[in-house]
Image (cartoon, rainbow, N blue to C red):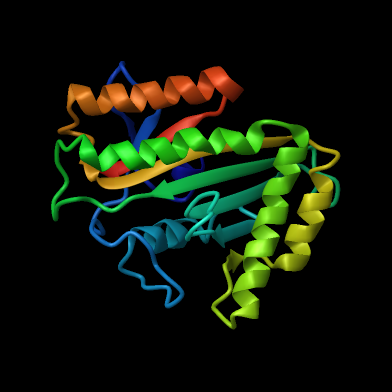
Length: 215
């Protein structure tokens, strides 16, 4: 798991849910970093956590039409001719309260976003389209003279990865990030919703699912 490699503490929740839960801790009410890249946001915390990981690219795709709030890309094997491209989606959601707790409402929308992610795996062409989507989003941002969406990597690398995706397999892992969820206080209702999401992703396209939550 990438989380373990970059220092997040990982532990299991309970047998009803297969995914792992890791601590994101003290940011909870502010979801997006925005173009000002505000560090006291859930999205910024996720990005900063992974900056020292072994990713070729980390992309802020937040906003209307997003694939996910944070998209990471890792090339497997020789970077010039990889054997595979590993993509990770991180769907971030703010908490409805100032402290983590037992609220099922904190999970409905973000679990729905995770489930909709399967659209990018529906065909080989659609997997390549993901990289086109990311390139277009950055081009629009630059046309508007906004801050780059690339936290790591650049358009030249992403264009190369898109071309690689036509020949080598693309895998996707999906994570939700909700510090409003407490791994020690998670209710049966919350765990059942997470388990349903996990099952759906696995039964459709065998997509691994993970949860990043509070202590």
